[in-house]
Structures are given as C-alpha cells and as structure tokens.
Image 1: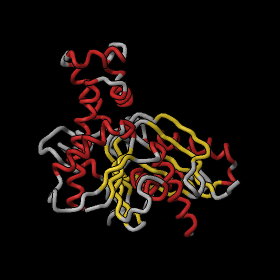
Image 2: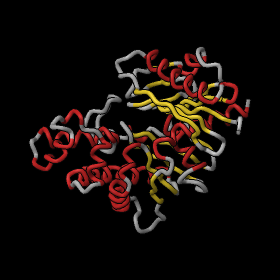
Image 3: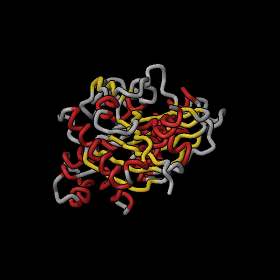
Image 4: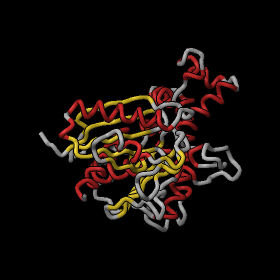
Length: 325
C-alpha cells in the first residue's frame, strides 16, 4: 500500500470534511464535523480541524501521512498561511497554518478551497487535458479557482478567484462580505434556499408541496431538499433551480469576457442538481456572451469529483509542496 498519502481538509460554511488521499486522487478514508457557527472564535474552528486531522491520522497510521492540505473558504494570502477574510467564518487575518502547525506534527499547507477544487478537477476530474480552466463552486456562497497551463493562478496577493463577490446587480441584495449585489446572492445555495423561503413567507400556493416536505417549518428547508424535490418533478423546485442557473450563466459570461477560458467546471453542493442547473446556465451564457456567434464558446461541464474535489485538491497540492521542500 502506498506511503505517499496526504490529508485534505475542506472547510466550508456548514462542514469540515477531511480525507486521506493517495497520489491518484483516490480518497481512502474520510472524516467529517459540522463547522462551528460563525459567532464562535477562530480557535473553536481550528480545534474542529485538528479533531478531523487526528481522526484520519489514527485511521491510517501517522507515519504514512506526508502532508496536510487545508482548503479554506475565505481569502487566503499569498503566503498560503493566513486567512485574510472569511465571509462565512470568524477569521480575520487569521494565522491559520501557524496555529494548526503547533498542534499537528505533519507539514501543513493552506489554500483557498476553490483553488484546491479547481486543481483536483484539472488533474483528476472533468477538466483533464484543458489548458485554461475556471472552476465555479456553488455552495453556501460562490468560490472560484483558475488553473492555466498546469498552474493555480492565485493573483498578486493570493486572493484571485473570488468570483462570488463580483457585483452583478448594482445596489442589489446585501452580501455577507459587506457589499451589495454580489453574484453569490443570486446564484448559490443560500440564494436557492432564500428564494424558496420567500415563496413560503408569501403564502404562495406554489410552495405548498415544499413546505409539506419539511413538516410545515420553513426553517428546515435546505438546498439538498429543494434539489431532491426538483429531481422528483416538483415544478416549483425546478423553477427555483432554473433561476439560480440563469444567474450562474450571467456570471460565467462575464468571466468569459475577462478570462476566455476553454472550460468552466461547475462544482459545489448545488451542482448536484445536474442538468436542472447547468442547462439553464448554458442557455443564459450563450445569450449573454460578449461577441456571441463570432467567437469560440467555452464548454460548461459539471464537476466529476463532487463535494470531495476540495479535499482531494488540498491534499494533492500539499503533497506537491512537501515534495519541493
């Protein structure tokens, strides 16, 4: 059995997921915890991460793990050690690598979670062989990653790829980042749930079946429940996903105008809706694309690695960094 194993940790707004990953991108064992509420101190989140890492180290043997990669949902500085800002967590200029390294005796690398997912999809998943890849991760918010000619593009200050905070609606909905009209307010898991709950709050008959599915309590409504309802034919849920898909297509068209990639990979939890999300996105992309009809169009594909892309990529990037030292 291979000894070239690494641990990948994917920290999102709702979960801390970890896995032991081999050099082929295969996840050999897994662990998971709920993400502490954003009101909790950074130390509580870090303790949760350490719990997941320790469980995985014990599962396979500490001497077999060469590195730990952390994929954080936030703005990670160019030093790949500090989380400058995390809209959905309490980190502000948080020295994450330093704090974790005191408690974990395996070399640690920190990266943005969407960068890690983009790397995994380029190396092991849907974008293999593509020279210019953009990953759009639809989860609690929207993350993004860029891989060009086999290199993750992190930007001068390490914060490239924060696509979710592009403004798409001037003076639009308030975003947790502090601005208004950010893309993730219209094309994310949070947006999907908010729109469904707004129908319920308006006593719309269109939402009757959805409300019944959660026992009459809209607080229990989640993105996966809406997706599942859509996949079983609930027309309201299908329309809600189509609306998210339309906004997704608008944002992708903007990104195509700026970066001209060959492939967009759509990942994150919301992407589990598959064609119910991606087909409307493709349609809107073609309608909004600058120079449409006169330029090559990027392909838009669903991620192949699912919700594990982030932890797979984080582990692989950490393994590569460890090999350079």
